[in-house]
Image (tube, chains in turn orange, brown):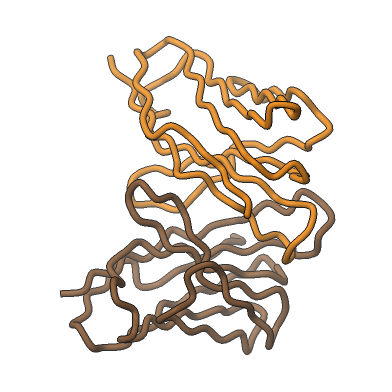
Length: 113
Length: 115
């Protein structure tokens, strides 16, 4: 079945760039997503990219997709303390039930002063 | 405002009791989902429903039940058969179908603790 993997932790200093990585196995993925989860809250969609794109930029966020290597990354420029959260990568397969997404384990981003 | 409302936010249960978690959406979405979140394990799909009066098991459906009598509502019952029910439960919805970006919109979650 589909599998999405992320590293569990990332620590950066305020003002630096953060890069969160994700790998996936399903080559039929149509869309790939990044969600943010703050403590005790639900998931908030940050951005998504269609599989025929290789880059998408939205303010401080840059998503890079390497479809050949099945690698997705999220770069956060000028990281702030408010960016501390868990970041989930998810993919939507071409086939299967509706919009059933497969999520990674999440990367806990800690921003230090 | 449009969104997804989960209740209660926190719930305590004694072993052997069934509990029902509520999920209501006013986004006019066809599809709704229940996920379970445990530390270090990400999100795992319990049940999903693509249309009213129809639902399918996800990856970890054992010990759970759902109903979808109304488009807006998708309650989840955690039964006494669920061996390890303490977790954070997330409800989500999407516009459904297989075309389009299909992103999920999430509620704020319900934390269930079994005493």
